[in-house]
Image (cartoon, rainbow, N blue to C red):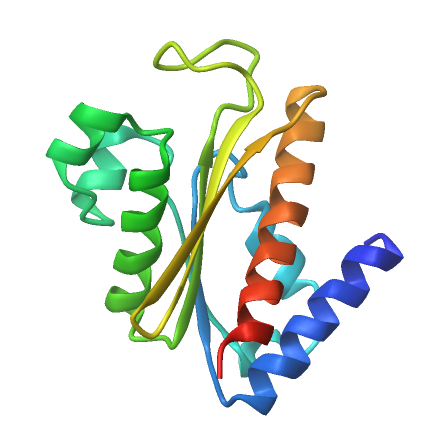
Amino acid sequence: MDAHILTLVENIAALMREKNLRMSVAESCTGGYISHLLTDLPGASQFFDLCVVSYSRHAKHAVLGVSNATINKFGMVSEETALEMAKSVKKTSKTGASLAVTGVAGPERLEEKDIGLVYIAVALDSITESKRLKITGTREEIKKQAAFEALQFFYHNLQLWT
């Protein structure tokens, strides 16, 4: 793991332990890479609870509970879907914090949306925040950058939350 990613994951772990929180993750375009980065840290079980990789429309709806109305209106790759993913995985896992990511890693567009479009969302208690990203690069580069940006966004919001 790159030093800057390791430092970020260590910082997340320390803050999660300090706040006595556990986290859950809902991933789509990153395919479990966020969870891989978190669980590479020894002792991750002290703060990390579960990950759902919901790659299809069916999984987003049936497993995570993203409403068909949201998917029909905004698409699988949307701020609204990312927010529902974050809220749902947090509720299902009964964790205090969650992170979700959905996007288009390529090589083809999805739902008329460009390659590299990614939405991330964080849920902490009743607070939810989201962010839109536009990432360039290969499929692998998009997945890795999306995972890193999502972890940074999670850490930033965790620092603000009291």
